[in-house]
Amino acid sequence: MDIHDRRERFEVRGLREQEIVDLLALYRHLDPQDAETRPADALARWRALKTLAGSDILVGCLEGRLVASCTMVLVPNITRGGRSYALIENVVTDGAYRQRGFGRAVLHATAERAWEAGCYKVMLMTGSKRPEVHRFYERAGFVQNKTGFQMRRLERRSE
Image (cartoon, rainbow, N blue to C red):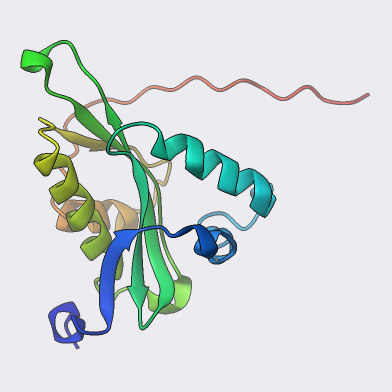
């Protein structure tokens, strides 16, 4: 069944405050080994994110259940005529709901929000080396045409 057949039951929208615990459960599908965030801390960070104009956590809900999500940050910019750009992070779909178009729908809705905000581009990076993850992003309309770099702070080890 195609995602378009589920429009009445599936919606993409901004996260609601009372859904923080559900979002944290969804994030376990992103990286089960990742350190957990306490709900109160997650709520505070989401509120801080929302202070950045146009930035939010978008969720895909199937009959009220969070099944997919991504974070979008709009970055003010001085080049490109002052047009902002959007960064997407923490793209995740519940493992039981993958391969059904929900993640792609969330990405498309996120890009649409970025275009409406006047962004000239939408970027994301993935650390995954899995070809199926790369195909997912390509099928969602992203093009792999830049080289990404990152720097991470190493955690101190206790002796």
